[in-house]
Image 1 (cartoon, helix red, strand yellow):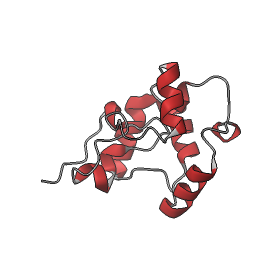
Image 2 (cartoon, rainbow, N blue to C red):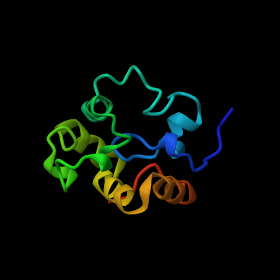
Image 3 (cartoon, helix red, strand yellow):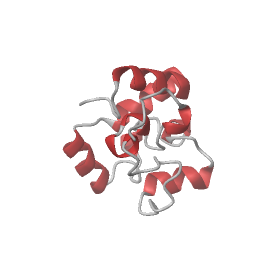
Image 4 (cartoon, rainbow, N blue to C red):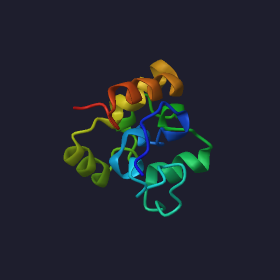
Length: 116
């Protein structure tokens, strides 16, 4: 059974993507970032968990997420290219609008990421 797209801060991935509008999440094939314990390969997820950050938007070490080697690594650039997503814009939007605002905007636009 396919889930509905709803605004939920728990569905904002650590990297800024919105799991609540992802096809894999909606079709029950992925629990989303927060519940995906198998995603130990994700450097962003493990970094945020280690620092108790909800997302990279909480990081004060880097004003621009692109300056962080964990956030802007080869794998993330490939995924961003394939999905045509701009995770950096998502992180900046979270900083500006908060997790609630980001979740609402992404749910309303029915997108998992801001397009490049």
